[in-house]
Length: 455
Image (cartoon, rainbow, N blue to C red; front, top):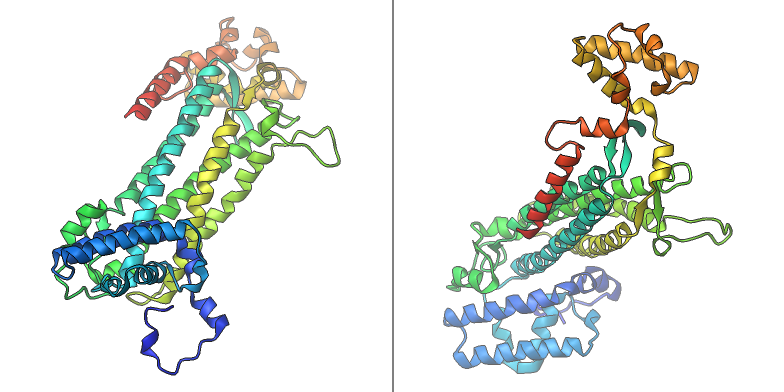
């Protein structure tokens, strides 16, 4: 059934084209939101004098029956879209009274309303999943608080840090992801209903009443902008893409760190797989899948941006293509967040392997600081240590293996105290800035993180 079929007397349906035009397979997920919006709209029609008290009750009861009918299973493919499905089933249930529900209402505004209602619920759910993952991050940080770990730049060992400091960096990335979702939620607080197809409606609807009924802050200001707008979906897709990108980077770290070449992390068996041919393999498949699926989110975001680009005002059928990317993105990021949380609980640093492979030259910056403390200008100190590193590596020696006599060839300020500087633990404790890897500041950031999760 089509809501507009009487417009054409002699139109012959082409089954292929009818299927091509229909969106029911992609927008059926909005069914719950369509019912919610239809209930509120019926009440607004009653308030506007279009529906009697009895007609309102019949429609509300009829919508309950539609929900039950769909729950029991129907072939939705016979309908053009979710809006047609609800209205058609309602008319089947209650007769001509059901035909009044669409008074003054357009599918152009219905779809935007449904999307906002549906997305609002799901984004709130995503925020809760992020909070759960943040809780796991804190737990892993506390369980491995004192483990010393090589920090990397350019995938080269750079400076020693606490593993707890490293893993807490994920907490703050997730916090930014939460903030982006909250910003996306703010875009969902204005009510589209009452905008009509593009010009509003002659029905005296109380849009403030509708907004309150459906949990919106206020009605939208411009009916043309309302039915054309899909920026709220793009905002949500960007926020979701950033979650995937953040998790992908850490998945990559865990894949590398758990390899035999590194051996820094041990993965529990239940978050690993093996090979169909090579029985010795212990593969980080789940982290690889998280990394691999990230490309999808970029494509979802890009597809909607390209769809909207250059569209004339206001509604165009192109906008039917907004359902697939947002539904897939939300559903898939939910799965990824759950999977990543489970896998994060199953990673364990291996301190002895880590210490064995930590390069003593990560302490070169501490050696520079030592010289600066002796009154040598930083840039000069940097050059001296650069020469020391070059010489030591050429001779196959570690920093601590250089004697005072050898060090004094580069500067006569060196004394025995230099060996206290060449120490990973001291390097970490010598950091003096808030937000650094100093244990005192790492404890403070964990405390702050706990407070954030409580608020």
